[in-house]
Length: 225
Image 1 (tube, rainbow, N blue to C red):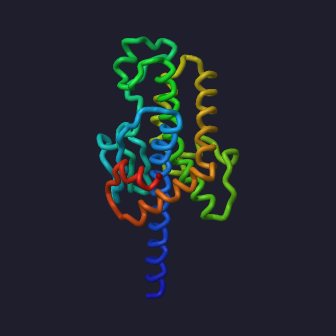
Image 2: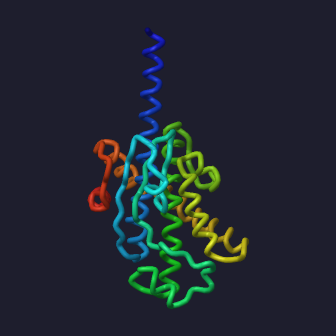
Image 3: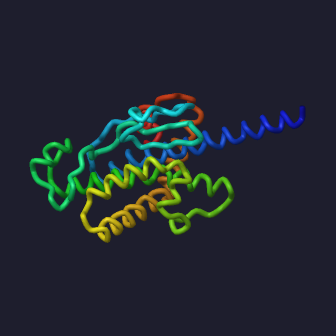
């Protein structure tokens, strides 16, 4: 009987840690979409945090900021400024830019939106990683983790989407690698910034205490103001 109680207790503890990890992951995405885009004067874009105790279908998850832990899935639905990729950004044309849906169709604005989307994708698993480090009383810095390691923090699907972006950036492998390194550093700096981390933590707590399946961007903005 004691053994059964201990096993159930251990399972409940693991579930609690999993919920916390997911909350920080999605709070990272959502805080970055709101705060990072605002800081760069990018267009406001609607999004919802979707939380689920079961795996979502591929159709539901496709193109979203995603997190999956032990068959429990969550995502930020919407939130991406760039929906269409050109084979090579160097070949951007006015016709293509007119289809993107940004307020401006300048190449500079497209690149700003492109960079922001990638950074916002990376912030989610980085926030989960920082939460895990701090939970274990370990110091977290961007030098202690690399991009591939984000797969250990619910970031596998996020990285797949990042790869789609980077593949469209250039035909040069060195330029693509340099761009990814630059944006990974920016995303890491976002998470290690004290003010941003305070906002991510506030939003994660709101997610955990609210016990909702859907949190709209309006609620997120209220928490982060």
